[in-house]
Length: 116
Picture 1: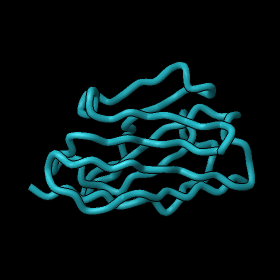
Picture 2 (picture 1 turned 90 degrees about the vertical axis):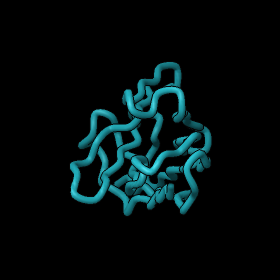
Picture 3 (picture 1 turned 30 degrees about the horizontal axis):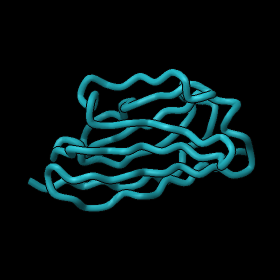
Picture 4 (picture 1 turned 135 degrees about the horizontal axis):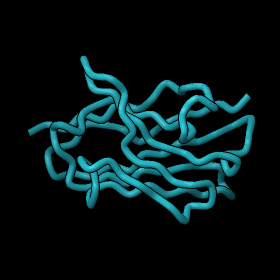
């Protein structure tokens, strides 16, 4: 069973940057398209970015286009999310999972807090 562990979150000011990482154990991530998701307080979880199995195709939610970059390193069994120009509305718990979701269990997520 694949276990996902997200890391790299923290507290930053508006305009700051963070790099999130998703490490997998117990399985091979290259078998899956992967996505970064986020859930803000009182809101439903939403997809932020996704990447296909080999990294050649990516898509982003309109709210993060031009600011976030998803990447993957299949040799290291990891997926990353570079987040620049962060805004208070980016505050959420961020999770990685398969895309489409549902093929892997959810990790604990990593908290991102952006202050104005």
